[in-house]
Length: 272
Image 1: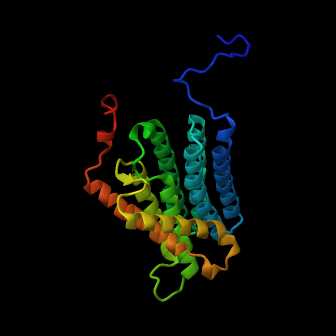
Image 2: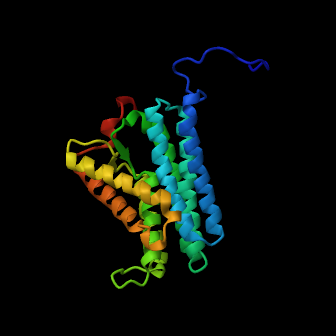
């Protein structure tokens, strides 16, 4: 029973690390910045500036990748950080995109927009809960189910691309078309997030060409995503973000599935 006194016993090796050492500060601050970007995106969506709200979600994707990288470089991974990251991802890549599309299309088709958006948010929560339970045991090479940052970045970069080029002769989509297409995508992504379909993580590969492409693409994506508010509309490149997301899930997902990567093969016998 709790007797009102502080327990000064050392935590055992099996107890979770809370991440209170100074080296944990940097990745956790980046995660908090990611959380703040998600909050700001929701606020800006309610104010009607959905383009800025979309770019804030793109920035959140980049911060989400950055906090994991910093944690590995500093050897500062902790269970506290993992849980904080999940809360951040839920807001930035689940709630914020749903609110953006509620604002865009909710008035014209409320039943479809709200029901599909809510299903998408629920799937994000289920996906993150599943990852929290299984992530450590699955190793460093594969995701199973679509990661929430990938889902958020793909659907938002599609909107930003259409908003930038709407009316162009070469573009077969419009915002009116997206009012029907986005709910369909949300349903597909919801199923994909809770599925066991494999997707390789971005890691150094045996091919120098693949590594060079990954390096250049990631550098360009960070440049685009972190400077969008400084650039005129014509120099923002959401189409490259869209292209990169589609290429990643199509090529990476097909390769991993054809290779025979299965969730059950990654789990210990006791979890199968």
